[in-house]
Image (cartoon, rainbow, N blue to C red):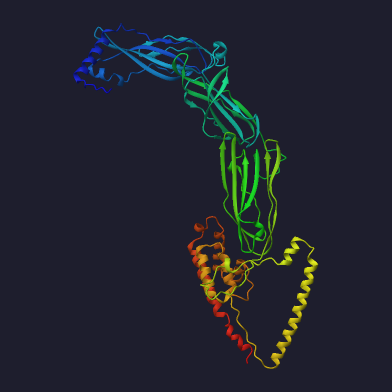
Length: 595
């Protein structure tokens, strides 16, 4: 059902206000020249509030404007300086009663204060003054908060409790502090204090949770918060009393009141770094694990290949900011391009867990043996109070040759293929495979090779005899050109430039293959050989180094400037032209043996 109301006229509203004011004026009593003070009880407990009422009078000019704007009047209050020394004023209100006596208008005012005692013992509400009016002192007794339960026999409506997971700890060791606010369906609203410690790092663990616990044979609602503490100084770590200040609903008295509840203070003994610890960086933790993984099988690495090695360190009970940069050493036979390490800390109800991740791009420069040094990290086991070490043992690698082979392009081949496809790795011979698997076949294989060696020697003698015969008879010998990819530098250069500009993973192999084709008489097997061969060209060497470093970086597209790429391409083009101008024409070889 929808109802509507008729608007009231302004005259009707004014009439009602005047009538109410008139009734108020004629209902007053004679004024008193003394402040009267009263409290709701003369015995209270520490951390409890009580009500103080102060009654007084003030002259009041009554007119129509003051009637309509009475709530906006600025009426002073008694001097509370002495009262504030022994009591906290947590709330204040004013109540008014206007009256007229013999044509004199006065306002009777009641100031209502909610007070909380600061100390225990017997004290007084001091005399209060307001204009020419003075109150009398009122005695009051403040009992210890701990006696409330014993005297009243009733469980407390609300209280604060703290709990530490240990009484002593090592410096920088994780300590868990739990703060709980207990209440009996009191719907608390206010501030639960957080710990602030000058000689420790304090961080909150997640959000507060609501749970239930039994206390005083009653089921309490509990608001629980957890904090992790990392002491930075040895000695006594004092945890001060933490307080809750706010309002609660007292279901027994059906009243909402202000309260302050404090926990008991606590302390933890902090021990210095033990003398038996031998590490360079103090790492106290519940557990530490160090692992590594590779982006490709490390036992199949070949010359020119790149593999990303990622180190993971996981620490339980330790902040990520406390984990130092790992000393991973310098690998032998490999070029290393480390990335900046990443640290991350995860907070949960049982503490902190941190991870340290560092990635290193490893490039196999030369074939043969390569070594990754041992990584050893000492840390302190806070559970068993003993030093432990996280270790990744040293690793020996065998870098296989690149195994680039030349292939004759087919007539229908559109262009020069990239080294990925046109230079397959050399397969393992049957002899090598047999030696790795077992030594039983070695004598048989050696006999076969002896026969092959004798046959080859005989064939060489026959060929030498034919050659001598031809020379004596004046037959010309002409050098023949063997077709292969190196006879098509225009195609290899095109693919090389494309690979460099697109930052392909095989770009360095393209440069090596191009250099091998351009300089067939040089012993170039790696990108380092290219740099060494052109060591006088500092601009080229620096461009290759910057390009190589950026190529194996996680952010290669953003890290390598376009200017470096273009400079490298320009230098390679000029080297190609220079090499062609100095390379002899194969057809001129016929002049060595004139007909």
